Structures are given as structure tokens and as C-alpha cells.
Image (cartoon, rainbow, N blue to C red; front, side, top):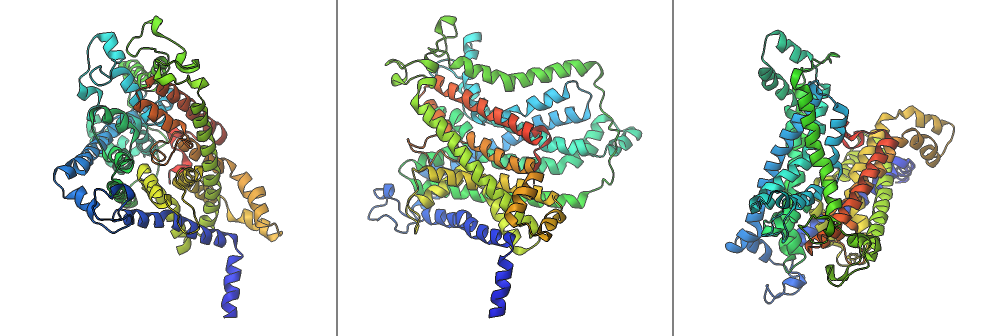
Length: 601
């Protein structure tokens, strides 16, 4: 017994073992137990449901939610089946738009002699850097109609034509906006494969007098097929769990998807329905990403490239080179720059739909508030709620980045040091597990788990601590990937040299390891900060008036029809997010258009 105790104590003297044990316990509690909690809630009577479930008490076991969700005729159709089919259609079609657009740009940039490649590549990823609802708000600014939007958009004012509802709201704009938002993601993945592809294969096909079309379909596409499938699955998962875009573009015409329906049920009288939807989205998300890992894992079996040609034969666009370049730049400016101009313009418009100079005002920025304008709401720069939201957003993002970044460094260190062990593998999977869950479903899990006292943990709903906890766990995968990659690049001999001369573990970390890999570790702090700053879906169910942040304020203003305030807040968020993205590039040297190394694995 004494011998075993000594072995255990010797094992625990190694910092990496202690870190792994602590992470196993904490992450197991924060990732696996919430899943059991949300499953339990689907079979539990909640306080708001006692009238519907007659004779029941809070906490009783019930199958009511499951039967009403799946087997109650018209109710099931409206509550679940219709939103589910809408979600699947949007996810599939958005993938098609993203892959076609992103793949086309990737091929043009990597395989033709088009001009201004650097500028096009940088601007093309701009919509992906910005919050997802940016293009949705821009779409409404331009194409809303007076039948639903109350006031016509810029298109109607300029042309005198009223866009039909199907064009302004619902399936078509949601698919187009989400496809444009995730097209840069497809560009990053597909472009990386095309950029590193062995050009000898295409050159061999040219020597055999194959046409350009045949080379594309028989050589290039089969090589990038794994990237296409991976892009499809990852974009499908992301669009399926999107909330902001369907909320902005679908809600005006009652076009519901799973996320908007879940938001409505969890905030209404039927939270049990919402927990079932969250569970279904988690199962689909995990299944999709497991399928993606299986596909990318099989890719090794099809490796045929053993060398890389340094001479890539670019397609000569000849006389079309300049027109194609101009066309691409114009399209990019329309998608990436014009929306920002529209937000600025709309925030100064007094009466929506009137773009005459007499209708411009600074009331929504610096006004003290007027009874006939938004219930006397002060301008953005005089509004205490906005400053409270800004402070909460910054405070939350800083806390989340510090917690996620620090834990990510420790996790990366321990996982890399014990690489190959069962404990390391389990902890590695636990740190990545939050990435598999749709953001709103993840928020719903923590709402379910921490709305009531759990042992010694008091109820956290309505507290800043809950937001910080949810954000830290959700964005831990970014930081942990950064930490693992940084440690795998670092030779073990460097730390061993410090151990030999008797330097303590803390001093080795702060004086040797972190300074050497500071740029990689820094991205583990900055990426959670930026992601948290622009997040809406994760926090929309959890905020209260005292903990609201900029993104939820924007959503609330938009729901009330106070579009000038919403546009102004959107502009502020974009400026902050883009500024910190620039800081990432300056401080870490990472370039998002070539893939951020710390988040690719």
C-alpha cells in the first residue's frame, strides 16, 4: 500500500499530471453533466408548464414534451417539423452558395493570373470577420418593403419598385446572406488545398492535350474533394445553429427555424420543447463533425502527391484579366464595404425611407431623447444602457479571453507533454467538445443546469458569472488548439535543460516556454476575445437587464423597430471587432485569408 502511495505521489509531482486530473474533473462537470441535465429537463415538468400539464407539480416526470413535440398533429407541425425542415433547407442551400462562391474565388486567386490578388484575398474574408448579422441588417436596409418593414428600403426609394416578400424576407435572403458570410470559410479551406496542390498533375494532363474543363473535373476537383466535403459539413453545422440571421430576416414573415423556435419556447411557456430542440441540434452537430473527422481521416488513404512543383501553371486570362479583376473588386466592395456605409447612413435617418438631406439628424447619436422618438430613448453616445452594454461586453470578453486563454495554455502544455496517453486523449476531447455544440443549444444547457442551486453552487441565472462561465467553456477549444500547437512545435529539450539546472515549473513556464511561443499563446487570448465580443446566440437566453451586452441590446432595439439605434450599435461592434482582428495580425503575424494556424486543428 505504501509503495502504491509513493508511486501516486511521484506521479502527482509532475505538473502535467496534476493539470490533466484537474481538467478532467472540471471539464467533465462543465461539459458532460450539463448534457445529462438537459436530457432530464426534457422529461421534467417546469413551473410555467403546470397549467398545460394538469395535476402535475414542478419536477415531476413527464412524457408531455416529447409527445406534444412529435405526435400532436398540427401542433407538432408548427412547433417542430416545419422549423426543422426550414433549418435543413437553409443549411443545405447556404452550403451550396458558400462552396460555389468561396471555391470559385479560391480557384481564381490560386490558379489564374488575376490582378490585385492580395487585396481581393484580404477583402473577401471581411464578411467572415464581421458578426454574422451584419449582412442581414444591410439586406434589410436595402431591400425591406413597406408591406412588412413599415418603411421602404433604399432599393425602393431609388427605383420606385417594391421588392416582393420572398425576396426581402424568408428563405431566399437567409440562404444568400449566410452563404456570403461562410463563403470566406470555404475559401480558406479550399484555397489552402489548391495553394499546396502539386501542379505536376495538372501539367501532365496538359501534356496529354486535356481541355481546361477536363483538367478541372478530372484532376483538380477530385484532389479538393476532401476539402469540399469538410467545408460542406462544417458550414452545414454552423448555418444549422445560426440564430441572428434567421431572426432578422425570417421573423418579420414568421419564417421559423429551430434556433428561433427554441428561443421563443425557452422564453415562453414551454421550455421543455426548447430543451428537446437543443438536444436534437447537439446530436446533429456532433454527428456532422464526427462524419467530418471520419472523412478527413480517410483522406490519408488517397494521398498520391509525393512532391510539390515549384512552378504552378496559372491560367492566363488574357484580355479578360482586367475586366475580371474589376468585376471581383466591385463585387467585394458591394458585399464588404457598402454595408458599413448603409449602417452609418441609416443611423442618421430620422424618418425611415426618406433619404433627403433634410431628413438627416444626429438625434440617434447625441440626442437627449424626445417623446416622439423611441420612447424618449437618448442617443447612442448619451445612452447609459449603451455604455452599460459596452462595458459588460468588454468586461465579459476580457474575462473570457483571460480564463479561456490561460486554461488553454495549461491544457496545451499538459496534453502535449502526455501525448498518446489515455488521460491526455480524454482531456483533449473534453476541451474540444464545446465546439461541437451549437451556440444557442450550449447556452440552453447552462440555463437548464444553473437556473437552480446545484449542491454548493448557488443559482447563477442573471449573474455575470454565468455569462463568463459559458463563454470561457465555449471558446476554450480556440485557446486549447493554440496551446497544443504551440507546445508540439517546441522541443522538449528546452524545458529539460531548465529542469536539469533546478528551475521550478512556474519559472520554466513564465521565463522559457511562454516567451518563446508568445505569438501562438497570444492568439489563444485574442481569438476568444473577438468571438465573445460579437456573440449573440450564446448569450441571448442568459442575459438579464443588468447583464445585457451590446449584441443583445442591438437585437432588442431591432425587435422594437428602433433601427437607427440598431444600425449605430452594429457599426460600433464592427469597428471593435475589426480593430482587434487587425491587432491579431499585427501581434501574431497570423493571416486569416491563409488560415489561422492556431485554430485549424
